[in-house]
Image (cartoon, rainbow, N blue to C red; front, side, top):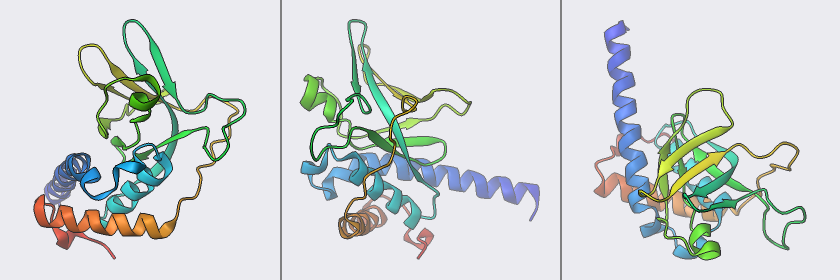
Length: 188
């Protein structure tokens, strides 16, 4: 394969990755019930599964997410010394290499009354740093994803595989039909 062919394949994959990332952000909660908007381990696992089905490497990354304004800072993940019963004390996003997708930032709306979208796709910092990504929500608010504080348990809870498979399959069908994401790119 020539250098030109390699570059064209890389560009095609990157374009497809970008389109898929935006399509997931737009259509995720048309398939996944809204009641899961604060279930980061579940929603990130669904996203990871969808990306894998489209042949894109993805992984789950534990993190702490900050919503920052000029007046205040709000934090989700890895804060409590003793986690609440039946609630994980962390946060996790789906990492697709050069961007992350967070489908559980609704915590900021529910816990702090901040207006945030249901899902965010954000480019990663591609240099070694404590910050994973930053995203401007508007002129007043920004989201910052940081690696977890040192010494915390970053074990991601296992979520029901049947739910992950069910919603990932439905998302793949939705994206393949209506979003111009080629279904022949699917891997099985």
